[in-house]
Image (cartoon, rainbow, N blue to C red; front, side, top):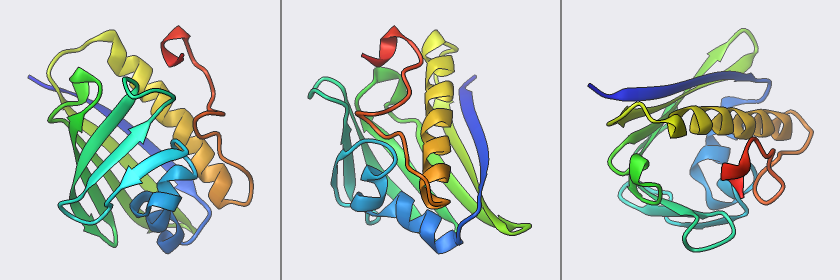
Length: 149
């Protein structure tokens, strides 16, 4: 048995803008962490750092199409290794709907709840940014618990 995280958010912005925020280094650095490096093309590696080398996560880019992006966890939190991170985009009623899933967790550990809430805060920041406001990317993210620092 595996465990999953799911998020859904509607963003009043063109799908191409949301896609760019999920598939370019500048885009990713604008809403998740400003310390983002790597190659966002299929087969490339992305590294996201949150203040120190031991607080980073790395991913292999598995798929990138106009309506789907998929990564595989290859470094960082042990619970993320070999899990999948998918970002699906659809147009619905004047907004781009981002449906996110982090699938394949091996155990139902408390970190799942933390990550689910943290992803939600970052996606709310992405929505705000693309709708003309500002994001809350690291290092200015919303702190949800002592695990964030």
